[in-house]
Length: 403
Image (tube, rainbow, N blue to C red; front, top):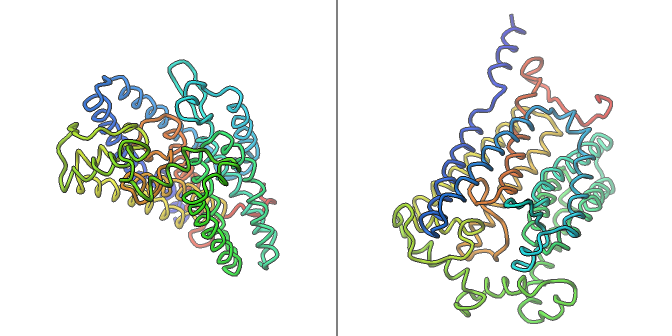
C-alpha cells in the first residue's frame, strides 16, 4: 500500500504546473508588450508580434523535448552539447550576418532568410550542463575537500569556460560574456569551494572590475589596445554621466530613464508612448513596461520573476539530485542575471549591455535559450525517482558507476 501511494504521488507530481503557468504568464505579457511596442508605438504592423508568437510556440516545443531527457542522459550528452556549441561559436565568426555586424559591431548572428539566430544563446544552457557535470564528478571523487582540490575544481571550470569566453569576446558580445561569467560564478559559489578561496578571488574580481572602470574613464587608450571596442567604453562613460551628452552616446540611456519615469505610478496606458527609445522592442522593452504601466506594472513583472525563481529553487530542494542541483543553479543564475542587468541598465543603475529581458524581449534565440533552461528545471521533477522509492535520501548522479 505504501509503495502504491508513492507511485500515485510520483505520477501526480511529475509536471510542475506552477513553473509552467508562471512562464506562460510571462510569455502572454511579453506578447502583449511586444505588440504595444512594435505595432502601436513603432507602427511596424502585426508582423513582429506574430513572429514572437511563433518563437513562443517553438519554445514550448523545445521545453517538451528537453523534458524527455533525464539527468543520466544529460550527463552523457553534456560533452557533445558543449562541443556543438563551440563549433557554432567558431562558425559564426566566419559566416555571421554582415549587415548586423556593420550596424552593431557584433559578429554573433547567423542570418537565414528573414530569421536571425545567435548561437551564443544556446551555448549558455550547453555550458551549464557540462560545467555541472564537471562539478558533480569532481565532488564525487573528492569527498574530503581541501584547498588544493578546490583550486583544482576552479581550474577545471575556468579552463573549460575559457574557449567559450574567448570566442564570444571575438564576436564583440560583452553582454553574453557577462552572463557566462555569472553562470560560472554561481556554480563556483554552490560547489562547496572554501571561502578561504572565494573571498580573495571575488575581491580580486571586484578590484579588476573597478580598475577597468577607472581605465575606461581616465585611460581609455589602454583598453582599446587590449581589444575593447570604443562603443563598450562609451557605455561605461554614459553610465557614469548619463546626462553629459544627451544627443550623443547618452541618448539611449537618457531616453530610457525619461520613458520609465514618465510612466509614474500607474503608467500612461496600453500602447501609449511620448518618449522615443531606440531598440525598445528588444533590450529596452522594460521602457514600454514602465511608460505604459508605471511603477505598479513594473513591480508586478518583477514579482512574477521572483515567483518563478522561487519555484525553481523549491523544485531543486524537492528532487535532491546533485547533478540537477548544479544545473538548476546555472539556469537560475542565468535568468536572474538577465533580469537584474536588463532592468538595471534601463534605469541607469548598471552599464548598458546587450542583455534581453527573459521571456518578454523580442528575439527568438534568447527565448529558446530560456525555454531550454525551463525544460531542464521541469525535467528534474518529471524524471525524479525518489517520489516512488525514497522520500528521504537524495538521488545523485555524482558517482559515474551509476552510468
